[in-house]
Image (cartoon, rainbow, N blue to C red):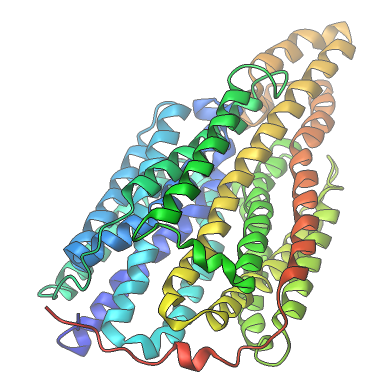
Length: 515
């Protein structure tokens, strides 16, 4: 597929970058809005699913969108995916309950999964493989800008207009991107490959991860992880994952080529990416909740605290890509994981007297760590695999990172729910008689702590009792993040030594076939 003129190429590029910007922003824009959403809709016990549903849907459907684009054409599938994303955005803004919001966030994630995958595919079609490295740089910049803008946009819209506009804001810009893609790719040629898609493997894997996440969220609502449906869901997930591996070993065109894991660099990238993604997404999801519920910050103030994280991530992604040309992958990744682990050491000490300056310092250190891990690991994988499986290896690297993020948010959500139940129960048992009525309301409806309006109606004495309890409950997720970050630091030792000397061979131009 080739655009017939430079103006049309520019139109396609604008549409692709615009839609990718929206998808990237949506992964962070809700972080600062969610405490207000909880106050409006309730459902703090299933708070983490608003993130997990989006991440899960976008991640597991990436291979499906790519295969459909090969069979049906880029333009048609891209427009469908963007349309699904915009429909999910509109419905999310109309949600009347947390359950509805979670469902529509999953629909939104389903569409978002197409945008990143097909965006890189369209770029490769238009300019050829020799320009892919440069375009990846553009994509990284778009992601960085969108991620920086996300918390600020979310905080601004939540404070000034309504949390619902966090989702509605996608609609006008998404429609413009849809128009640009529709015009720019008009008259494309289609279908290079018509191999079958691994529908069975995808379905089994989706069911396995869904069972795992539901089990983890349910664990946060039980007095014990051995109670209710939790053991059955976790066991079902394990069985389905085993079935998935069995299917992939026999599938002619598997969703995940298991032969990739015979390559040491791919194994190391999968493990380190999964663990670091688990820690990172946990921090992003729960830092705003800590700031708003514990320190009383506004949504916009919480958004500013996240800025150093993304700035550090973007800057050190560029730095890390240059460092691996001069020093070994292992050295760069170990430095990044050490920085991330140090950030979680500091975050695990957060309490009710936390200042925004200290929080910004710690988030900046976490961003530096992530920047020195993600891009260098991607370059390492690309230089370690045969060119014939370069695309699959790149997809697997991102796949494990995002699945780790979905699992991490769910695990941390269940841990927070356990600690919240315990802390509020202990506080009620020890409280003076004059505070017990107010505490009973909070124990029954913990969303009252987050809502600025209802929080203002609580007595100063009650607030002083609740702040340490909330700090311990929400802060427990950062202790989990520290444990995971230490595990990721150890896993980074598995990264083989080497430098990016072989990338040129992987970037030789390929002439796209035409029908």
